[in-house]
Image (cartoon, rainbow, N blue to C red):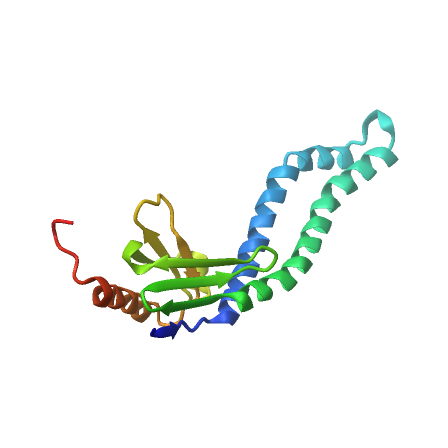
Length: 177
C-alpha cells in the first residue's frame, strides 16, 4: 500500500488557530457585554441616586469582566492552538485519505477516495494573511465537508495527487455519471 504523508506548515496553522479563536472570543464577548457598556458609561458620568460608589463599582465590573475573560481565554488558547496544530496528520494511504487531529476530543477520519466528489481550496482573508489554504474534502451524500485540511504545503499539488490517485484506483469519471 502506497502512503503519502502531507507536509503541514504548522507554525502558520498555530498562528491562524490562535487569531481565529481570539477573534471569535472577542465577538462572543462583545455580543454579551456590549449592551451593558453604555449603561456603565452613563453611570460613571451621572452616578444617580445611589451615590458615587455603587455605580462606579457596577461600571468597573461591566467594563473589566470581558477583559479578564478574554485574557484568561487567550492564555488558554496560547496553550491549545500549538497542541492542535502539532496533532494534525494528513496522509493518503492507498485508496483512503486519512486525517487525524484533536486535543481533548481526538478524531481520525478515513475517507475512501471513491466517495470524494470535490477537493476545494479555500483561502479567506485570515488564511491569506497567514499564507495558508484550507483544503475542503466533499463526499457524495454529505451536505457539508467531510474534512478540512489546514495548512497543507503545496495544496495544488496535493489536490492533483488526490485526483490522480482517484483516477488510478477507480478510472476516469464518465460524463454520464
